[in-house]
Amino acid sequence: MALEGFAVIYTTGSGQVAAEVSLKNGLPDTTYNLVLAQTPSGAGCFTPPQTTVTLTTNDQGQGNAQISEPILAGQDDAFVLVTSTAGPGDFLASPDVIFG
Image (cartoon, rainbow, N blue to C red; front, side, top):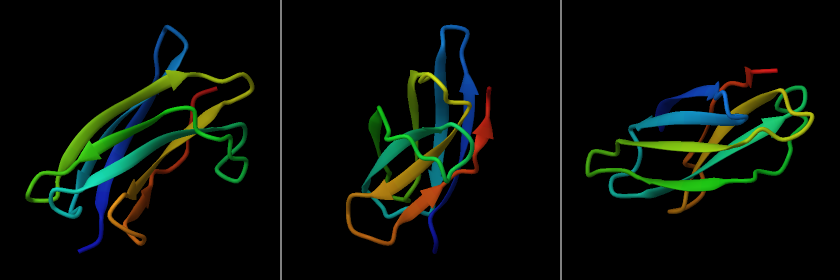
């Protein structure tokens, strides 16, 4: 099965961009890195991530996590990248969400 999931990306009133991430069909008992990538005009204009958090799946390959960081100057959208620390190939990216 392929890694599946979703991210709800939003801004807060305190100048933060945040995401609630839910993974399904991941590797059981595996740690994933989550990156909240901010971009000025789409995924092709990547700004290096400021924050990385981890999510560890349960024995069924499911897990949830939250990530947030200050909105960087000149950034107006964001997406979430999910990668497995267990090896290459287990990767997921959310769609870009425009907030600016």
